[in-house]
Image 1 (cartoon, helix red, strand yellow):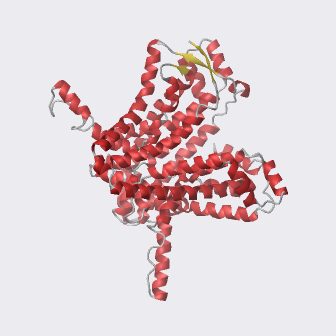
Image 2 (cartoon, one colour):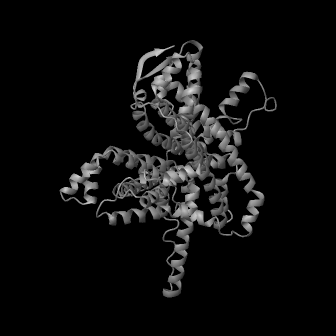
Image 3 (tube, one colour):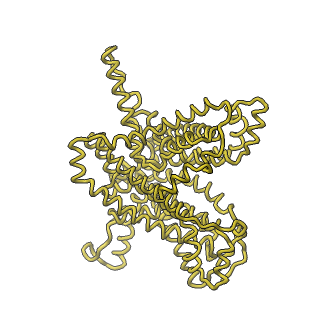
Length: 570
């Protein structure tokens, strides 16, 4: 694997080496590298701190809770990986290649669970399935059982966390797998049918192997979100790396030990990235492009097969979106005075302001980096921007630790100098400030904006740049006057996606936020932790409603990539 990677990386045909830098773009290249280095600081800080001794605390952690962190994290990855594979791949195949009652609606309805953060699922289902909740009340009323007459599974457990995350994160696999099925060669699929293959056999022997790289990419994203989760595992009392980082930092006050836990968590993430890359490099099946652009024939299901498919696609939608949203809406209506009060308005304003600032900043940084790569597509610039934009793959708790350590060092060093030289204290200039929180968000979600901007920028022909240069435009003016108006739709999508992710982010917000500055996510976490879910319902529902924005954007574009013929086959 690694020898193929090295040969590909240093080959002359590698994409980093296909173009030369634009003349006179040295200043822009320098700016790109500086920004890439700045946003890489948290990741590099955590990586360096892995090798710094943490003293007796680390020895205590490694002998007591570290094995539990590793075990629970591994079980979560296996459990959620299996869940998102079954739900994501199964639903993607059915809605893409089959016709059954409701199949056209499920195309976009199955994306809706992505709008529900996993920790909101945990809060709502704990109340829904509790002893005093509607499910057990109905069970007792129908059977006449008492408390000691039956056993009911405890949702607040490792198994419960796996189920909650599976129904929230499966859209990652669904989206990429559906896109892969849409791009597959019609000729290959039609050949399998002409040989008498059933829909199940075509799926298992043809479509599934061809879609394996996309499935691996979707599962990697889902598992990264699993490792990033804090609210669910903390509420269910499942000890993982994210809960350990938070408690080691705030409970024990041991930053070095927390950074090493963050380093361990980053190793898990890097393993997922390498596994996904290995899956892609190991899968080199070429399909004829002519077949991939033909309209797809679909299987027309009938009878029990059709209704079984409808039920299978309905289950993740109902469990992952309909039930939690309905519960929160009913709670908000019943407790409107406490769910939507003056604090809700203040937290909403905090959330909107911080999300807008982070979104605008991330968009500006993404524009600079993407345009810098366009002007200087060399290996140094490309690697720098890739490292700087890999924060989305790193859990928020890791990024938070990687920010507070250098910021704290800077604040303490500057304060010490001012005390000794000038006799007064500067206090905390960076740590625990809005700037630190925005910086954390930008590092965490820069990849969302960068990938969107880079893809849009790649669609603009280089001849347009040459023509503008011939008219005397400088590079900054070309970007501002020509590229940005053309990319306006993608720029809007990029900033909206970042804003939505910021509103839902919990681990980084909890650790980095300024004192007495709470967002909707933090308020939901606090109230739900105190068993006051009804009071948090307004904030929770607001987070879900905002999360529908990227769902709408995705639903508008998911079916445009390829037409499906109305003619179907049995």
